[in-house]
Length: 210
Length: 210
DNA sequence: CGCGAACGGAACGCAACCGTTCCGTCTCGA
DNA sequence: TCGAGACGGAACGGTTGCGTTCCGTTCGCG
Image (tube, rainbow over all chains, first blue to last red; front, side, top):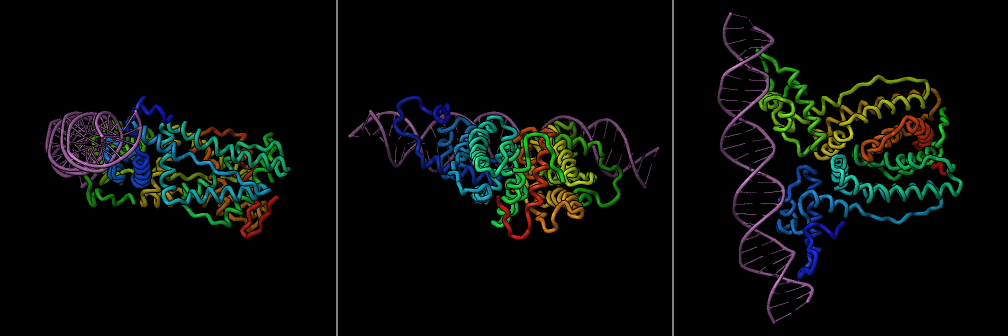
């Protein structure tokens, strides 16, 4: 995706685009995104904040939208190592602690909802996020659940799809939507609940109410 | 809040503002919000879509932001009756079914994330949403949980705060963030999991892992 | 070493938007 | 009934933004 940016020279660049400038644009982009929102961002403001020339932007991307999608896609790629604490509860606590730390980044609760909102409108952005964020993260958590099944902590027919939403949903809801803090003790308690919940959601239609 | 809109006459309006026009503006506002996003909305586009004059807007609100906050606040007020099926599981299924129906509205998955993102940036909007959406909805679900405690379905020391996030989070995550469908059977299974989870999250620090 | 290209910066044309101010028409309320 | 005021519509000035183009300077690859 990054090789045919439509502006990239096809051959013989005597002087390549400088990473320092690209990094400055990226930083300014996310600061601006957090401050004024996706739709209110202006290229002028970004280059002003980055201390670069406007041409530096259009030397890299054909237009504002392409720049936004490319920068978001690049920033979204974050591979974390899969912890293995030996228990599902421990894995979940580890996972959610890391995640909540990342989501507590000062810009996170402004940038991420802004990107999510725009992804609902921009198909290309939505696709990029599904590939670079949703898919790898879900695969990682699915691995945690599989290990738990292997250890006998979970039934083999538990609904992984639903379980993944159960893990991610409350964290996102609390930290990104409600924008309330979540302390370590609550994360442990949340993991208590999740272990019980995931074990209870079987794929067959048995309703174990009451 | 609606009485001193800063443009409202204090006395003797010979001809009041027409509800038909206000409604047309509101409809156009949300359609436009869904289509282009919060920051890209323009008053010109809204009045064009609504088929009203621009002055009709500024006769009602002092500026665009005030209009947005007022219209969102008005639309956010939705009191639903509290179902009482006799069991926690039944109440949760009923609640989530209603909620998922509302969230499946064609504009919902574009409008709601847009509003959430903007609320992270606009303190006044955030406050309005907390008062008109968060507080009443959480009170309603808390009532459901209290009834369950009264019936002995839940321990009296379960963490209601966390439980509320556990109920709302997965639904929002799945329907608004991931924008995937959620069928009735999955809602029932989700309720299975939630009943187990809520019973498992005690306020004291006991970790009931494994 | 030298040329070509990226660099910061400034300016451009064009379009869009905000909020105001006019119209002429219609309609509710005193 | 009659007048104040809301109505749809159009235009205004001032500002901002996009994407392009042009500087003079700097720097890296051949």
